[in-house]
Length: 424
Image 1 (cartoon, one colour):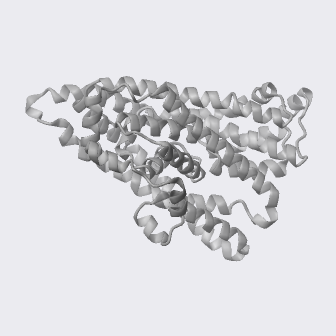
Image 2: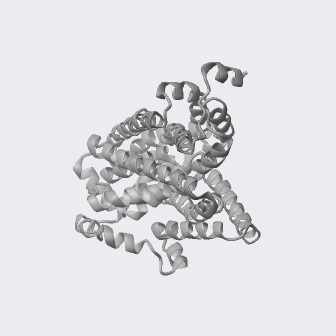
């Protein structure tokens, strides 16, 4: 049985059995009894985040090569990815604010969830949401002690240090850089193995966490979950069919032709939920069907598999709003700006493997003080969201390659006849 099927079964079973178990007198407070098991699952996820982000982000940055040699091509690529990701997460936040996917719960239930799951009273919540200014946040991004930042799981400081460290590695000679990158690549691979291992117990963790929530708060919370899925996927599709067509149009390519020739890559990405697994097919289609030069495709697309995560950014934006609304936490302008900044940087550090979005979501929630237990609310529908956002991510990689190739004079769009001949 597929893992995503097991997780879905865990979600449904926990949601259905939770309230029923709560009504059995002999069992007592079921939610209180089983919640520590779910907390252990959450701790496993959080345990992986710091080494995973450090290793993957440093390797991803260093893989761009000598920044002095790459020059304007690297700047164009990173600039495109940064703007697209920031727009994506802002769109996700806007959709969350407009459609309020998590605002359907009774106010008494929200207050109880806030107290029981976050350990906060309304008075404490008011103090928690009194956050520093944006300027203070930007200053605090720079860590005085990177080791302390890792110990304290201050992810903005961790990401900032990892980016600088990766850039510094690109300046070193290949002889000095290679041993460090070999170690970090091994760490990164090991963390991905751990992620896959933790995801194997996800069905049971989701069952316990959702059963605890349902036992305490009833079936009403499931309606908000359906709203969350519709808003998230709808926002991803809106972004995919507005931002990307505009990008290809500005690159001199017909959006209709682009999607006609690219759709098989998007379908493959959707089915595998992995940007890395889709990369070989994406390289082939980008060069043979879309006319991107080998040099441009070989640089931009592998970089995008690590750096460019537009779909993941939308997922993080909507998920943050959703979980905050479920817990009854009000987010101000400063919080939203922090989400845009953190989600953009966290997306850069996201590995192109299935399920990684759940891990990076903890970074965003942690940055603005939202209880990471809220991840349990989205785990049950993670698979369909992961599939959708991977297709969005991969499409963004190719749109960037087309734009960079166009600006560098290395885009040669083949005719329909040439495209069919290449396919044969």
